[in-house]
Length: 95
Image 1: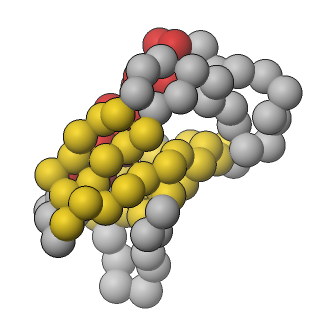
Image 2: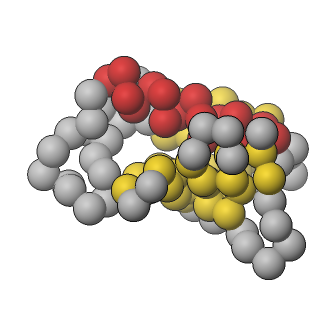
């Protein structure tokens, strides 16, 4: 279940234990103490594109790639959070 408090910009998913912070050019996915920054482009009032890359890395460990399965799980979670906030989301690129 998604939840957003009035004093925090984070979109929290209480059930699955992750949060997403949405900014103009990026989204930060947070899971426990780990963070991953994704590039995002807003193409209109109600749309966003998430840019996928083959070398996604945790912000705290940029030397190690995230496996494709974990990347897709994170992308789907971010996509769901953005859709919950009212945006139509598309994906660009590939993993």
